[in-house]
Length: 225
Image (cartoon, rainbow, N blue to C red; front, top):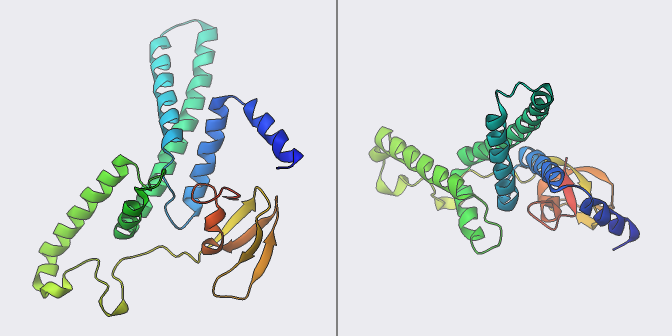
């Protein structure tokens, strides 16, 4: 750890928790919209943000109707900040739900393997949504056309013949990343391309080459932008 890291830690400690949560939520929102894969659910951050939103809504409701100009101006500021948090949460969840709808079987398999880790892939509500949504689709497909096929061809997760029926995200999609710390040499699998990623560098690179270092799903040395 160098002097810049020490100064950064001191600066972070001086920032109010609410502001740090806003910055972290914004970072999670950007990363979720940019990454081809769904990222682990930030449960502690979302719990804090939702609790703060709930308290702010209660405050606005309690003080609504107060004709004091100073109080009314304060409520306008609170409501503006509240709408910013609500927009980020809604957009963040929409980005995750879109991926769940697109790759349900793949994401469910990844979630099951993540249960033994400190950061499960999905929240309980997302898992419930995925399970219910997939059950509805399976019943619809079965009643529409799958029931007319032989039993060996009715599975939606079939991998016979070396061809998987499970849709997966494109891990070779290009993403913009910024190095928060020196990462070292990056190797792009399938090519002979190698490069050094140093703190502050911005690169366009394949997701598969950098995801192990990305904030949210790796060491946190690199952030998506």
